[in-house]
Figure 1 (cartoon, rainbow, N blue to C red):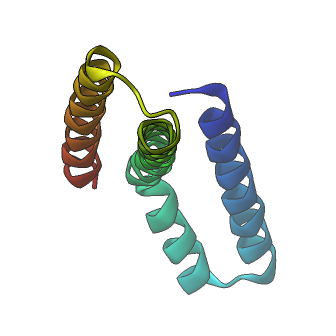
Figure 2 (figure 1 turned 180 degrees about the horizontal axis):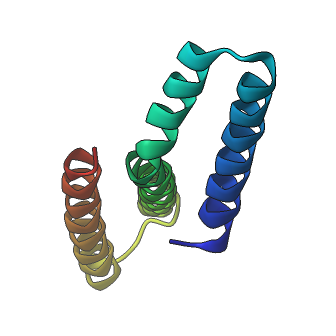
Length: 111
């Protein structure tokens, strides 16, 4: 878990503890129980934060690959490459497609 996620989780716990203390002060036992139940699910919340961060990173990589592929298409269109250069472009494009497919599989596996 990175420090940003840890900070978000700490803030979430602190906020819930503050709410719990307030619920105690006003004598709202039902609200106290709801907050306690929520705090009991802290690990699920932490996993959710982590999954969201992983998703953002994977989408960022996906976008970077797409930009690189567009650059290659543009280079193939504007540079009139010879056959050797064209083959290098194709190989690079195939590798980018493989990487992009692997990222899509990772995105689908993160829930």
